[in-house]
Length: 127
Image (cartoon, rainbow, N blue to C red; front, side, top):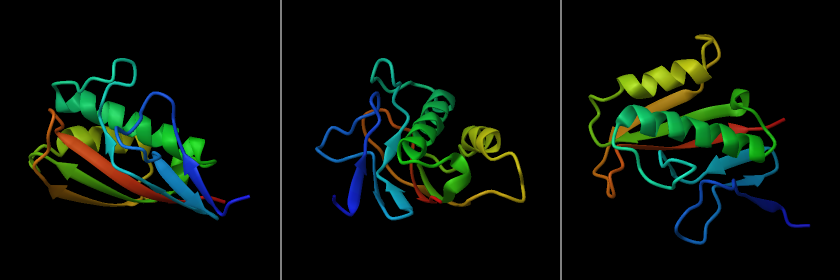
């Protein structure tokens, strides 16, 4: 049995031969999570739709790794335009409604390709 376990979710795959996340012990770290539509694989035009998909992928990844969204301790978000935080905050509050139990989060601006307006990664401590 290997110490490191690759985490994959069916609908959201990387173009390169890398997993969605990796877990060693109780630590799970994701790769970059985009807002592609899980059914079509296409990038929605609206940031609101990309954010909803991105948070859905994040939930699926942490659950595939044996955890829940309550195990997420840190999230980094990259935005094409940092002034567009409102759609991120909408999904953030849906996933983490308790103001006394939210992960740390940092947002950065970055040029993105292929219609991406937002992306993230996260770290979770499970168990």
